[in-house]
Length: 445
Ligand code: GLN
Image (cartoon, rainbow, N blue to C red; front, side, top):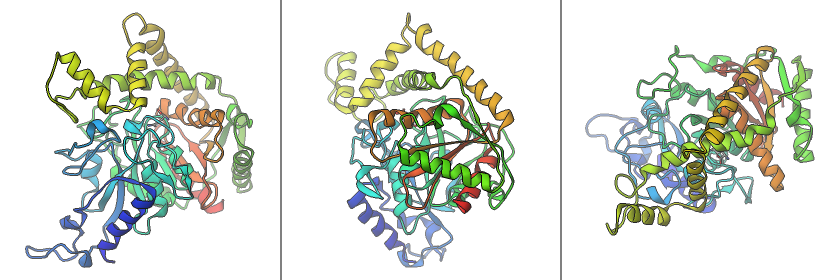
């Protein structure tokens, strides 16, 4: 394989679909990409080491020497001087083709809140890729050379674009993958995960990036597991289906049909399911948005025009300068979240909003954990077609619950080339179960 083809493909897909914010133009210079090593071996596309796989990386993950914008104008010319832990971990095994398009700082569900070009859905260019990790999901679907990608989810940003672009998306348990070098959206919710053309592709990449990291204080201390060993298993898992989400309300007929088809197929293979009730689904959205926006508003305070990113001519008082730089460089959605988030954690409002939301979050986690004592996995769904506002709202509703709880989840397309994903959720650190059932479902779907 000539590695120049990889870059050419990335460039031509980008022209048509805007999957990348930055293509790694110096990709061919990476020494580990060369088959022939040694002092005098010149980097050239021709002696590309085919053992090295190719991935794309969401643009909120720091890559040394490669522009990293988090989809924001305020970081337009930010070039990190260090690699995120996940990037360090893949060195030598995967080459990074480029940094993928996303909603600014992850604020959105459709990759349309972008400071740069909006990525287009590979199945239908007139539609969204889903968000916020839209570019990575779209590129993984179309690329001939790259079968996996690193994404990130705060409230659904892996499952949603995976479903929209008909690829597999794995969101691991909170703390399983180091967040060191991730440009935070909401620290208590952010999780780095993977996309794959197949469950196997996504799992292989997860194997490389998972594991304890002392640089991230929220990283879980746990012995390293080989997730690939859960592929190809036919073990029978017990499925719980949350009634509040599967009664068809606000969900298109086709998605509902595909969902139940999938469940029946699993049942035919000997997996039992029960319909169960989850009492707190009506507070998922407010709980999630209060916590996410409160944390986002503090995280964005560092973009003051002094230490990071965009700056301007120093004029006026600090407050005037700070406001000027931020007004010019944050998008509308980021500004809305700064205002709402700041309001919700202000003295006097803190107890009514932020603290209350944290308490409800604990109740949500407990309810999930109680139900997951009796069931191995919960399936859910999401889709792109003909999104009414209610359906758009529902697409977040289905993903924010397990994201609030920090549970691992996988989205697997119901069919090849269909923008509908079957979504399985398991208890903390039970990646084995979501991988087993996701892989099983992929084989029988
Ligand atoms: N749509 C949700 C939000 O806007 C989740 C996005 C994400 O996971 N980054 O916050």
